[in-house]
Image (cartoon, rainbow, N blue to C red):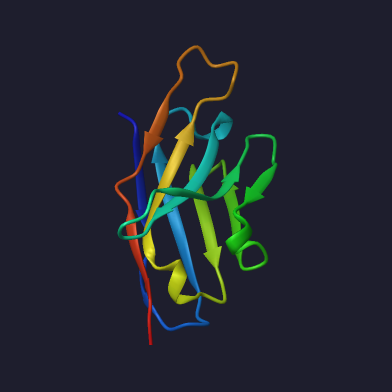
Length: 120
């Protein structure tokens, strides 16, 4: 059974740091494009950062230089190190796994989300 389970969210002061984790179960992690998305109240879900199986990464302009996405294929775990957090980073953060182009199924898996709140 496919599962993505996020952890590491919480309340942090502006300028602080958090490290999110996403533990994946199922035989798909190493060849998936893995990503972190977020959704703030009243806003659409947006891509924060993504990591391809080939090692490429991309980031939303709003988090470049502050957030770092990484993956450990041996542990089936995705990470998001968030530094210099701002109030506008407050959102529910979701882990996502997308099928590579060659895969026979176009899977698109989501975790349940973890809340990040940045406030003084």
